[in-house]
Length: 261
Image (cartoon, rainbow, N blue to C red; front, side):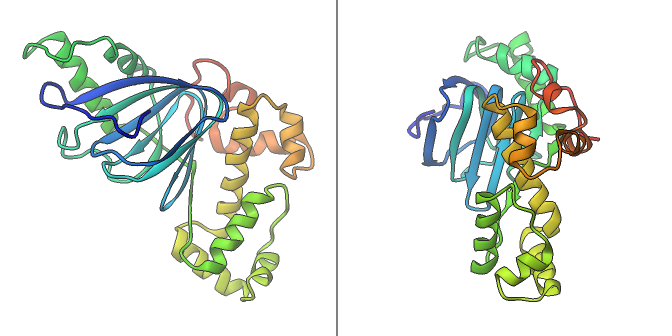
């Protein structure tokens, strides 16, 4: 998606856009004056903003409010189907970045919107489709695929190390020693700055790395061992506990209806 794309919302509330990316493709830092729903039919997209990272698995989506500066990294062959949305289309559109569940209905509406005319009559089928898309966006479920970044230099450096070595077992004692603070101080400051407990942040970092590795076609056994799990069963149990399905089922076609347990 070009950083110079311009959108005209004078005739419709949203503009659909389709783009396929090869493995390893990137989009540099950019922003849009409109809101964006980036939905993936295949592959995994890593989204980075000034506030953290989000990982978008296949059949899910990421919501970016208008003006959000971000960049993208593709893992696997990514088929992206995006909606650029007039921020004034609805008063209650999401106001923060988030990875979202894309229902089968919304997925089909997005695909159908690609062939809709830019201009349409009031009360027409085309108008109802656009309005239904906006209705569906308002009820999207939020998924735990973000890694908020702390503000302090010490905690940020710690987070970078955890992401660089996701297979390492990080205890609070080891992490506190790493940045020369007490465990109590570490836990308090980490939650204050990220909104997550330290253990939850580490678990999410490992899960997001697992999603990227699985999207590249690596086996569940290899991913489990690379991320420090004693056996594939323990990894699969964590995956199912968090996402409601096994790793192999999660990456099966048309799995976007699976929810979080």
